[in-house]
Amino acid sequence: MTQEELDALMNSDDADSDNLELEIQNESDLQSDEALKAESQQLEDAKVSGYRPNPDVAWPPPPPSQEHKVVHQLDDVTRDSEQKATEMMEKLENINNFFADSEGLLGEIDKVLDKNIEIFSRLNEKFPNVESFKEALELNRDVKKTGGEIISHLQDGQDEVMMAMDSMQYQDIHRQKIERVINVMRALSHYMNSLFEGKIDDSKRVGSAVHIEGDSTAEVVSNDDIEALIANLGKK
Image (cartoon, rainbow, N blue to C red; front, side):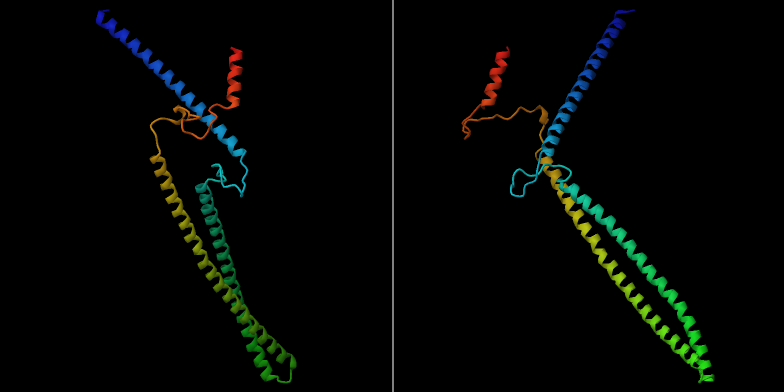
């Protein structure tokens, strides 16, 4: 093996070692970030679980839980409204079909009544002294009149159903208005996030100072902090 081949082999081993160390470091950083996110989420969940709404207190605002996220709630409203509106339109259409079918059946009955009236009219003319023919003729005429009133009511019901369907169209208009508001809110949210975006991750930022010169707070260190410091010194 020449010196050049030996040098190339050594350089290859060094590169593999560097890559392995880099992968280990990246994996360690990833696990650390995940641990920080999990801890932050646990703290956030604890804050949310301990929150109790109070209408007399304006601050702090409610936490961003599923019950208080505005866009989530609006999305639920639009989804549920559209679902219920679709169900209502289907119900109204079924009612309209029932009215139409009933009107058709009454039309068939009306044909039978016309035939009965024709027969009993002839019998009454031929046998005017037979009261049963006259009574049957009057009865069929009354039933035919009642059937006409029923058909009129069914037609009125169909008209009312059509007007109800027209009114339900406003539900879709309201849904579109809410969706437009959602889109504006989402665009504003993206803009604000971009506006306040930083180069440094929040988990890597230095904590804020408790007291800065000029603050109205006179107590720089709390009693709890002092006691904790003394306890730590005593352990050492």
